[in-house]
Image (cartoon, rainbow, N blue to C red; front, side, top):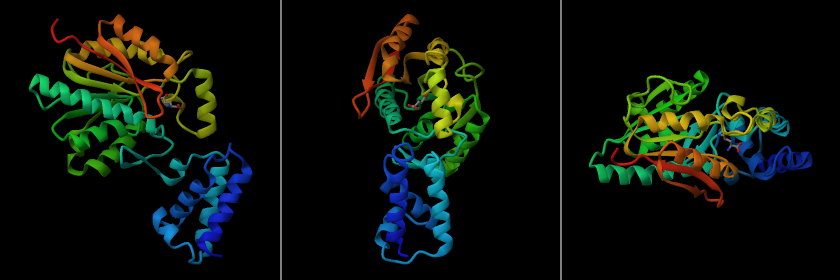
Length: 295
Ligand code: GLN
């Protein structure tokens, strides 16, 4: 049997199971076969006429079986690309979503403007609910002058974030302070000490979160935002406002259906220039507010 035959059979196997197993059977089969062989997908496609050895075929079949049973490709591969970087992921953390790249993009835009206006290039940036660390690490990679820290309530998630910091930041990993914190409670910093605060907190309503977590195996605590999904924001927004400095910016990912209420909460704590920005799919994804420059 050639690699091409194995790929065709794998893709057909996932197709037969229907969209609940995989919406992209051919892509998933190629990613899983490349992983079973320990090569890149490009290399696999270039070697399609080569024969497959029995041990690799068994590995591939095992991965296909897990995928058909609902395991996300990212967990089976142990990695996910985010903002152009390969992050390690496993069942201890939410799988990074492309939607969340908007948080990174806006952090650069607002951060650079703030650094310019304040004349302080060493911006102090904190990400709450960091999970795999994908947002904070992407920022630290591209702005080595920023003082980036990140927190999470889950010690498991902090371990994954530390792995990613070592993988992607190398010698600079120690400069990314990681700490355990329930949203922004605890000794993260003194009043007014941050220029940017970001978060992609759990924001799915409890009932739906339970179903999603059971279906994909993602941690319930990374998804469950209480009955209406807004619970974490109601606590986090006043906390963030207290520790943002003059001109500081709070950037929050949310479900598009939550954007209007989120803007109300941001305005209610006195944040200004409150607005929501759309992601690449055109969905209202990140809502932000600024601290006044003067008190
Ligand atoms: N965007 C994720 C989803 O749609 C939810 C992420 C979160 O709760 N922070 O499943």
